[in-house]
Image (cartoon, rainbow, N blue to C red; front, side, top):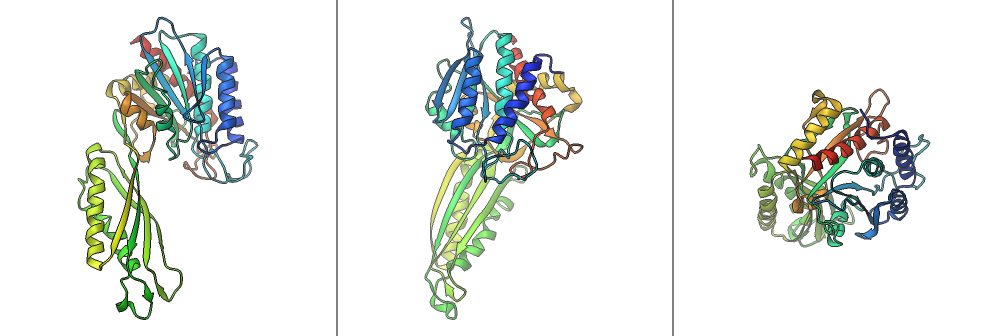
Length: 386
């Protein structure tokens, strides 16, 4: 199955993944991780750039006769999660953990570049090690620093180890597969006063409570049920004491959708509901609506090619389609350069590896690592052959 990786590269996969897991770093703080990456790429003889998008690293396997360049991206940042105890390679940094598999992504791309360097493909391969994927804008930062230029990247590829799929399974599809991620911060303003005299106040908490339920109408009554969408209020803060009606209430939440037109329309729909409810209760409001990630949409031709590679690798019966309302800032690169994002199963009930992403007990079945690396190597080769 893993005929492009030699024994040293397989050993490196596990060693590097465990080393990075042991020393996790949050977004834009990946100084040690970037150093590990740069050292390994330099040892391979690649052209290496550091400090791209603050803490990002780029390794270029250049073919002087190349007419095309494939960019392969791996994210490097960890999460503010306290890891469950009991692993020999567990996080040595309190409150920080690789709870989403980025340690595996980084190690996988490093091993893949080693294999590609030994049997150089007929084109340029640009390995993009991105910081700050977890909501801090690492992809836009690297784009601003020119990661898609010099040489110009023609197509992109990225993979994510996926805990809900068993090892030996690969999920790939054309079109939308990961949702947009928007954030909203809402302040509802009223008139505070004594809790025993509500008629003398304009209660923003009461208004905000109605907003929590009214905002669900944006999905349940204003959106085509065939188009997945989510509006979630995640925070609600109001008041300082049991017998005081506050002067304002604060809400924040997220909006997700897989449809680009809906993504464009939904802020206006959201504010229309907010304005109406606030007017009904005599309140004013301030709305801060922030775009974070656009939907992640796979290019049809790239997805078809990756599916063929995946079927050769694990068998057609083990290649499925998967969609999620989770979000990825790889979408920022794929809006500019057509690409494919693929999920590689890494769960194992037999090994007790069943925790979801962002969970303190999250782990990767390390038998999935060579599958991920082989997928990247074979796809890169197939890309230049075609």
